[in-house]
Image (tube, rainbow, N blue to C red; front, side, top):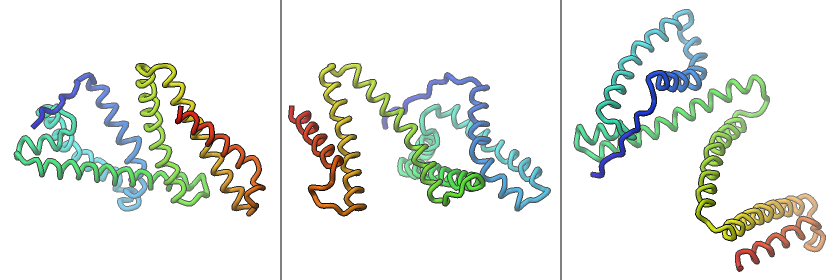
Length: 213
């Protein structure tokens, strides 16, 4: 088995504490607070105190786990090392991924409940907007990092050609979408589609020339 990559212990206890508290307070507690209060009533405070006691055991387990196995994906690694079973380790890894998906869905659903107070949009549209936004932010950062990394070693002419092709592709897609909307609304003939058709043809022509050259 390949040796797992060890974690770089560069975070202090204060930074780790802020990270853990921020993860809990910034997401789950706002989603579950109303449900807990509705079920527990005046005993909600004691319910949270009992939950804090239970979480202490889980925190101690994670502390010991990270100390013994300071690697990425510590839970599957601990299963593989202790039980000598890669299949069980893979099962634990998939369970962690499934738990993360369920947590993200719960937070998204709770967010739409709070946003419904300020917006009259349907729940599915607000959940879609939130998911797209949260996906687009890291995707944009990743794309920017990749572009910057390629720009460091690509020749200037190749980079300029790739950039121009990308811009032309975007404009081509925009023109084609406008052309489709224009045709659906007006049901005009092929010679009466106007500027969207001309723009789409020009962009496609320039794109073909750039790729061919």
